[in-house]
Length: 412
Image (cartoon, rainbow, N blue to C red):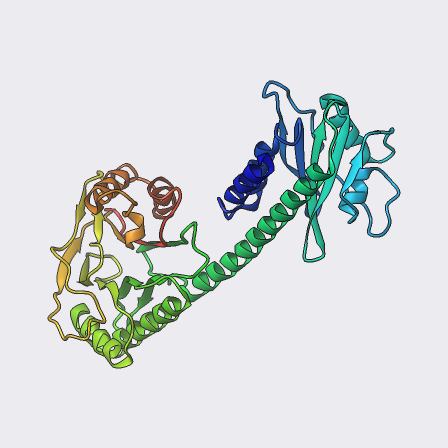
């Protein structure tokens, strides 16, 4: 019955995180003291790396660990048990601990000398014919021998731990590829002369799929700077494809037509209807002015969070009234143009809703927080401003975030 309860708790821990090392540390805390007086977990990478060491007595301090221990060479290993397990043997049960004659063996012997050991069970964390690491459980008293039932339970735990670690690594690989794809779809910022720009894309922490958040900046044929941010409905590859289409269609329409921003968004809306595209929000506008200024920002907003303007003295202001309806509804709707003079030193901030939305919190509170945090960074360079703003606003992003900032030069 105790074994069944333990395995139920193991199942809960294995499914508690997509971070494999977090899972291993939680498992180590779970098996001590139920199955062992202390437990150690080492993982194989380019070198051997310790990720967990738990003793039943929290006041007992571990022996110093030599990071980056050299792994045993492939093939049969006549050395200590830990080296044999890392090479693929196991599980191994030991009650004798002879002197070590290798760096890895001496490291393991130092740990046993510090914590004590009567019976040690070393199990490879093996999955898909690969050894990912080793799980070690040690009992210090001869009155507590390892039974066949104990060994079966330990092997089951090691097997589940290895699967969890392998799944976590596969997830991280897929997630990394998805985010690389998302970043590849986003543009490099153009040289806008005296106008400083910075942009960031921050993927959601718990998403393995690409999303539909995007930004763009480019120079129009008449020399104006075009800026856009948007968010396509959904968090999957289809949303990324729609995002790329939307970005490219907007560029083509803005380049080919001399319409104001509202006219470009109307044309884009009609194309989305024709292509049966997903719904999306967007802010699109242009910054006009000669090289030495003054500059003017003209824009139209289709259901997106409003642009935010920052003055050099820290004053902030959201621009525009209520946004027009989002794109892709299939219903032709009127769209509004708005205009704002960009006085010297002003910073214009465009962003997606992931910057201001938090689970369990009203959107208005998030928008107030954004104004407050932006005001504190009025004198920071525009790139550093974006970096620190993301750090304080979204320490653990629940949604994708894009951020696009433009600053006009100050007087003189």
